[in-house]
Length: 188
Image 1: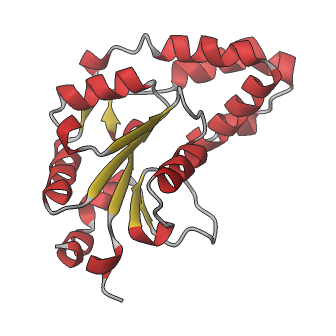
Image 2: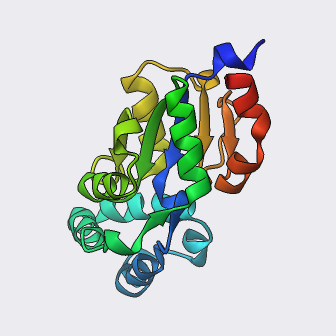
């Protein structure tokens, strides 16, 4: 089947394409404040996806923690964060050719919008799902797919999420999104 007819949407994990952004301070907070109370093990901190699952577990056990965690993320200084130029150019290129661009991030919506506006790509973005709605990336992706009634065959996901066999789209880490010219050639 022709890829051009399949790909309609590109979902980008903003956290994965930002320069100078790290969740390390938040990992540290979770490790020092909550891991003893909640019996978390070191597995929770091996990847952002495991971290988010543990974070959700923590928030389910202690609902005030989500508020505290999101308050910390509201303090992120967006002036120090930039999107790689090659990725930004690719996003604009796909949007100009009719692809819908969706953004997912653990950051609060206001911070995401500030970053996207500062980087001059907010106008190319069709929808955003953030950490103040869903803490876990898989839930944010599902929310976008359900909200827009899109099945996974019609998306390219840019980020670090490991999908199960039910995901039929294309999942690429940010570096591969830039290297993979075949996708754009077939999309255009």
